[in-house]
Image (cartoon, rainbow, N blue to C red; front, side, top):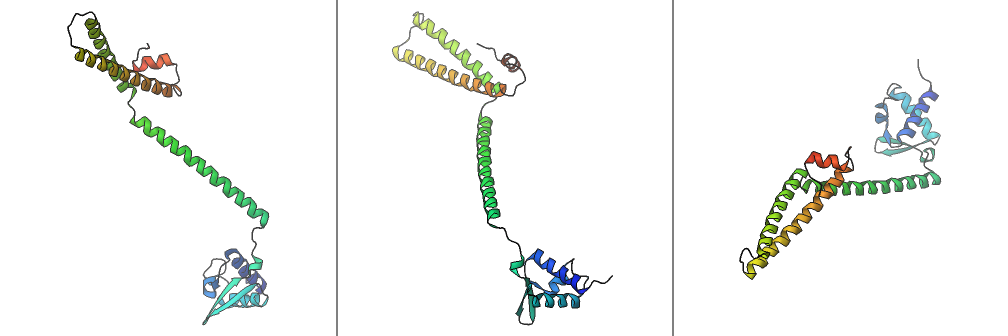
Length: 202
């Protein structure tokens, strides 16, 4: 069923408003909405819309370009602009906050990945405890004068013990911190976790 001139003009006007950019006649005929109307009908509609002042016509040599009168194109009013600006600011703030959370999570993950596992910490703790016991036994023998030692050697032994004790305390703190982090999502209690990883509570 053929379309009358008013229908074609309405379709052309609607398409130009929707796209809101310049078109040559051949470009309009390539669109799905207008291609079935024919070149002559579309050209006639454009001429009528130009006369009515709804479409602007510009000539570039032999080429004519058509664009919708911008007064017919709706634009956001001031309240809408304020609302959109507010929404943009809100989303920008949310993005910044999310990025900060991600940054903190990545830092924490990097720290956890560089920290020794529970098994490795347990093994080091046992080694340091054994070494500490050995040092304490040797120091006890020295204090009871069972073994003769020079003042410089005694100072070295004492320094070694202090270093070992410091390292022991440091490793113990790391182990406790890791256990606390695991306990936050561990379904059982602390005693069950210690038994599972093979650590005896002091």
